[in-house]
Length: 431
Image (cartoon, rainbow, N blue to C red; front, side, top):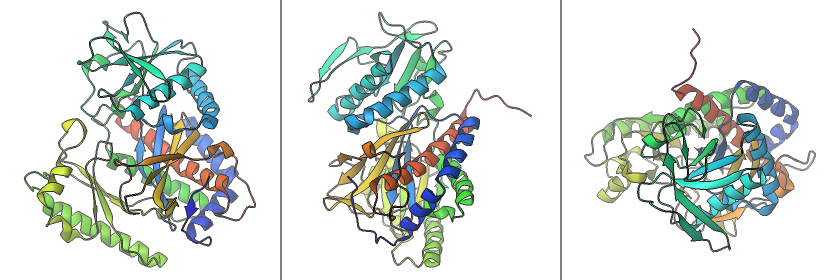
């Protein structure tokens, strides 16, 4: 089920799709060689926006929490990818402990945990959930609307290992993005594999660092395909030392927004795009669609009202916002049942395993769709994100469009692997 695309069938995205399909053997070889040099994150989800004239990732999540949105048809792919990932890291693995988010009353999030357990059980592991929340004192059984049931138990720390009362895992899978920092209970677990590593959490990770790595990947990929990397890369800038509560640093933010809008205008002029450019201002760390605003004119920064400043000042777990990423706004031209939609691609190890459309009937094509009221419509990756149909007119084939989404998502995943290498506190340094 490909959404109704408003984009004209002769649009630049279709030229890009054609270029990607024509270069498929070269692209797959390029990725293969990259993965020989770099380790993919354990699992990744990437939000993509298709503006009709460019297709770009706008967010990359290393602790994806929407596995429940994958259809049953996608499960075999996910199970195979899970097997490959585990085999590479710990072939003798038997027990897997999944560490969930601390505040887990959201039934959609809990359904995501149940789906993760299903995937790893089918991959041949005993799976249990261990919470690192100090508030959980005894096992909690939760029945889910679909008939699933999960039990979350308090995680126990011994001198060198993390486990449960009667469960000693060799691998710990974090489905908790560590926004408030890595707690001591997770540190110095030298005898167990912790996936993703602690420095993938939002206490260390920065979106600006990720998009710097992505810029590098996009340039090299653009060279391979003979395209302008801008077609797959949102321009961005980093802005530090901002305090929304006191208003400090807002003049510097205004100047940077102005400079970025000028760069986007030049690109729009070059490509004959008659749309008003905009910038998305986001907290440089953090998730859940918090700490985000859309700016069309730098003067808007001067007139920010108290409500907007309060919204921008704090993100998940009460973390104050002082660093920002300014990102070129990429409108989404995709619609599903008249509602604005954006594809989200899910990967495990280096494989695309599926995805879904995030659909929001009350938001516009410039807005962040990761907000209350969003619905999720699975992508038909059953038709194969890895099985494109050569020779079909661009824009007319769902598998071809999904293959292209998968290529852009894998570029973002590769950028995340560069980023994790650069921030690894235990990296070996060769002079």
